[in-house]
Length: 280
Image (cartoon, rainbow, N blue to C red; front, side, top):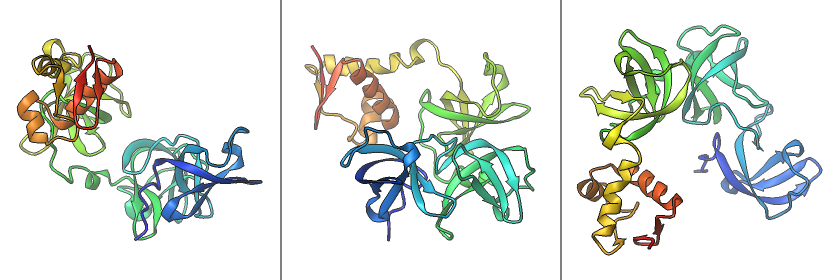
């Protein structure tokens, strides 16, 4: 089976050759992929590696672009409707070819000029990228594995009597409560949040800020304390078992990776193949 995972995503692809119409990129199992000339710089040469978004053009050929779409595969975003015809609704997602939402994937009839919450996915049947406004079926399909205070990415989707509904990490349903909101919140806004709790129904209560000992800076302290009491070396890395990480530091593997990433960027630690070392 051909690996289609880069379709609808950004990928770093090697330039095989330069042609009058642009650059031919190595799409590996997908074959040659054209980067049209308008996206090529004068300095681009064979063997260069370029970061591109891979999708389908108006003739359903796999092509590349350096433009940034408003939404990528397996993500949610609010998009404007350019056109509605007998095939479906065509959404503006920031690229030359619009994103199609077939009628079967419309929660309700979409009106031209409207703005809707859309999920972008790869349709295995048609082997094309498509959109859907039946967003609920793409949420909460796996159990959420978060710990309190874990940082997440959220998309605010709807105002509710209790607060604002949101989508957490493009995977789960969440809620931000009115009495815990201290800054303006807008529908369609993307921002970071923090997990308060995962409820019994597997929905997630989200906070927009943390204070005191729960701040992001303080989450690095357990790792630094461990290093200082173990001669500046630890053999717990981002490859370690999640249970070991939680038992040692009281945080999820995802939070641990973010914390060591911050420490690495600040040049407090160095990350080696099988260990993490405190810089002296």
